[in-house]
Each structure stands twice: as structure tokens, then as C-alpha cells.
Length: 152
Image 1 (cartoon, rainbow, N blue to C red):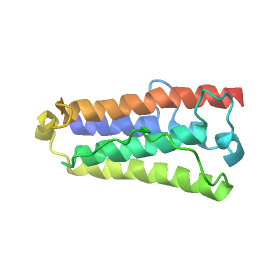
Image 2 (image 1 turned 180 degrees about the vertical axis):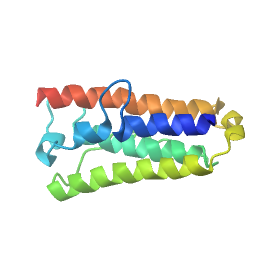
Image 3 (image 1 turned 90 degrees about the horizontal axis):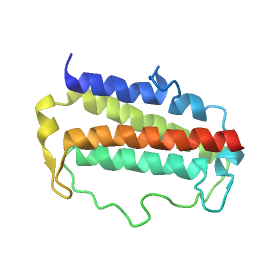
Image 4 (image 1 turned 30 degrees about the horizontal axis):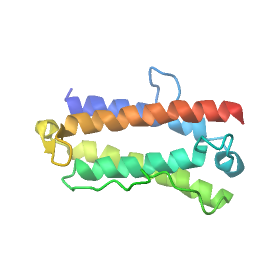
């Protein structure tokens, strides 16, 4: 099996498969309401919704990088307040997260494993490091979401 197929399977499993860590983004978020996602448990912590937004934006950022674009990360690091706390807006956020997974799946379908060694010019990390980094990033924030959900 090609390395890109293994990585694609790993990334998909964290979203809605059967990962080793036994929790997924989709399953963790499926019964979270907009009110819960928006709730600020502690002034020093991000909300579930803010984390989901952050995940979506970083998924898009890294995907664009490994497609050859040079991206400038904003100073807010994609942590921004949620303006519309409605159920409709929350459903849209979850749909956007799902679409970001579809975009990654499509990317891996066409990815040439020789491109893992390409270097992203802004930080000199390989595409391989970026791809594994976004998986690690999702997993890190999934852990935060799981904890925040338990605190609701």
C-alpha cells in the first residue's frame, strides 16, 4: 500500500473511523448542541465551537500549503469569536468540517508519494511533516473537545 493511502486512512479514521484512540471528531461532536458548543466554560479556555473553527481553518491552511500555495497564518491563529451562535450556524460549521475531510480525501486520491519530500518554503518543513502535523493537530484538539464536552 502506498504511504499516502495509509496516511489517508489514518486521517479518515480520526474523523469518523475506528482509530486506535477510540474517539473521533464526528462522533464526539454529533450530539453537541449549538448552545453547548458556544458555552464558555472558563474565560481562559476556547469554546468547542472556537476549536472546531480553528480546526477547519488549519485543515484548509495545510491543504493549500501541500497544494503549492504560500499561506500567511493570521495573528489570531484562527481562534476568533463566534458571531452567530444559532443551531443553523453550528450545523453549518459541522458541515464545513465534514467538507474539509472530503477535500483531504480527494487530495490523497491524487497525491504522488514523491511529493512528500517537497519543502514548504515558509518554514522548511516537508509536505510529509505538514500532513502528519495536521493529523496531530486534529488529535490534540479532539482531546480538548472531549474534555470540554465532559465539563458541560
